[in-house]
Amino acid sequence: MIPLETRTLEQCLACDSRRLERAAMRYQWQGGTFPMARCSDCGMLFLRVQPAGETLARMYSAEYFEQDFRCGRSDANSTDESAFRAENDGLLDRFERWRRRGRLLEVGSATGLLLKRARERGWQVTGVEISPDAVAHARTLGLDVHQGTIADAALAPDAFDVVYLGDVLEHVPDCRATLSEVVRVLSPGGNVVIRGPITTHSLARRLGLALYEGLGRDIVLSEPPYHLWEFRPASLARLARAVGLEVVAIEQSKISPGRPHGEKSALQSLVMRTLDTLNVPLTAAFNVLGDRVLLVARKPTPWAEPRPLLLTAREGA
View 1: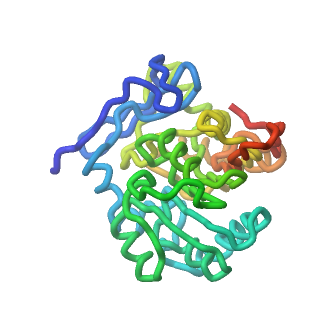
View 2 (view 1 turned 90 degrees about the vertical axis):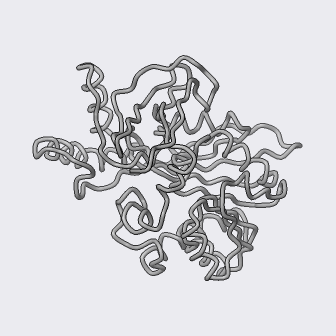
């Protein structure tokens, strides 16, 4: 077995606080233990021990895009254009309310399906992706995709009208540094769209964490520790504001109960399925306790007066 390369965080990278407390969840993977912490100051949940270097890069091989893409919630291959066309068109419809055929950057562009569709609709597109396999596929489509992180790409400042991060910010080693670089390359008045999982925010997961914390035990996930950051709406909004963005909207959704994720007993699966079934209409009606989030933020223009925060519903905690 190849030795694991890891790092241990002694402070919250979202707010720099060193006041960390235990959270009742950990990953066990390839002989390594990856416990979760909670920042006492900003509420961010994150893995205190994280995969790093070659270990982190190895996690995003071609197998990831075949088996674990979208947290294993999608049965479609990441190169299947027809499977994601409606979703991508829905995103582009939204972007085009702000900018008609503007300059689009996708951070974590995977195999390039969104960028390909955006180019077909008249956008100027650029991508950034860490996986060499995904980049290779995107380049066969004739797309301009940089391999590595957004910092590695060394993009020009104020170069994009819209920056999209879909199911990516939870994977990056430093969520604040990544979002700060997004702000640097975004034009004044431009929009950032962040979409991804907020799994620990849902009803079943909140109750589960509270129960295990009360018992002094951990929820153990025997799978790769892909999610270095476990966002919730409030902590994600706080992070966006910390890097200078104006939060415009936060929309939560709840994935309908499906096949169990991870190893669970029959009783655990039944309880979670019941709670998830109740959770779906609750989230739809009140924009609370979702397990997916879409955050829209804006880079202020230097001459603009600060605008009041507009949310579609409550952020949650």
